[in-house]
Length: 170
Image (cartoon, rainbow, N blue to C red; front, side, top):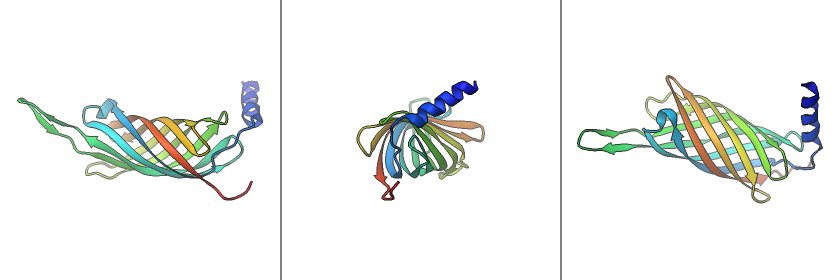
């Protein structure tokens, strides 16, 4: 086990790649699954944060944003339902591991503050897989979760993120 761990660390440290340090701004859209599948049509979110290059393969930082889930409306002869919008502001720590010049994976984890009435928020985590399309533009796929009291907010997301490179020298 220790040999495998050392081999992975050596592989990650030995690859000639660069991290994506700087201020990040983007958006993502997604579809709710599980507990909110029938109550929310789709989600749109704004993403913001800052990443610091701990070394050539690992970025650490902070992430926040705004998540808006559009409430579903049903109307038929037998039933009529109008679900409210669901909104969160996530406050999270962020980690990204760059396995090549273009590919990264990581996670955002922290707390999502509930904004709409009756939404107290909860534990937030968002695993992310990213692909760098150019020097500063990333396309990413993620799965986000907010653990609410008695329910779980889960979405599958596709997003775009732009990095405003840091001016400091390395």
